[in-house]
Length: 467
Ligand SMILES: [Zn+2]
Ligand SMILES: [Zn+2]
Image 1 (cartoon, rainbow, N blue to C red):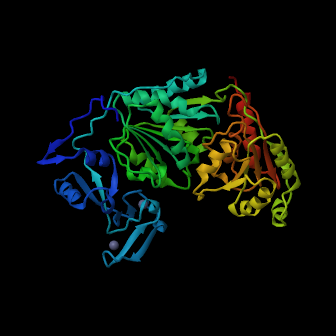
Image 2 (cartoon, protein in one colour):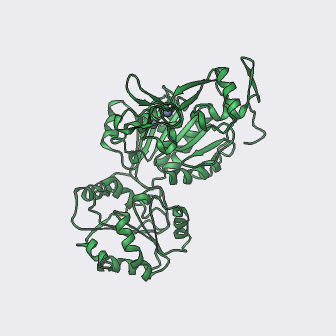
């Protein structure tokens, strides 16, 4: 944090105890496992004795079994076991286990906000870019909704420049002393957004939360977090922005939606940003009269490249026989000859594993990435820096990455993982750069599905919209 900023008094006397700023900064708005705080146990116990925390049982049994952290109530997501700690039958929540196991005899700490955190109001906005007419309109509409505490939906094509549209609204909210959260389902997106926001808001304390994120100092008025990390917040954000809203498995995972609601203050508005809003989100928007912004054009004004379909019959068998299907091979050789970077999407890791050695025989720099791949970031960077010719990938790279002049193929586009949204996002990787607004996107398939048709239709519809 910049030293010149007026900071709140360093300590507060409260019921005889001096509140250390580090503790207040850390716990404000958080719900945290008592066992795993980054502070000495005795210190935490003293604060508990002085009623700074509400101590909550992590898994409740009444009226129904519920995890107090993620609010999961699905009985199938609890596991009963003989607990070594309490020597009884204990229950833990499988749903939020990635945040560390919490069972019936564990406790959560909830900071009691009796003396609310004072927020910084002297933020600066350090962005020299220029919004397009469409972006400026959406930015204005979003800001208006937030000020009116109304929910908002921004539906914008891939490559419309949605992050830039958020800047003015976030700045406005920060200056009013509001605490803002930008939540996104993917760690990659948090990692991509973090340096951009730090640059644009150099005087703002911003934290990024994702699995294994380092400990960060100060009170973050702007939080970038994966949606899973929202389980660790409660009743704290004045404004919630949900980026890539469609990537939420909303229908499958109500608890995650609840996490969004739980992390923000009750009256705090939520803004959803997406290129592929679900029918459920659109209908909610209408029913509840949310603000709405629609952008059918990319920031550079060029239409979306439209995918072509190519049959690749029995591609699985061909790979199994140790061969790359001929049409795909032709496509690959074309891209290599033209020195164009490429992404080839695979429906399963299994098939990709079979394919990768075949591709590496043709060019040793080709690599594969998937969700558990620890060096995913480096590999994408190497593709961007032209150190690699191309990558094979699962749907993990369907969104959030931008590579100049990238060409895209989908192998097995008929497979169920490639929903219309996924295919739109994948196609959205192509032509994002203003110097390379076109590019090749091929859906190689073993039979055309309704989802493939729907994806193509939606993209054609966007291109037909008036600018
Ligand atoms: Zn849970
Ligand atoms: Zn126990």
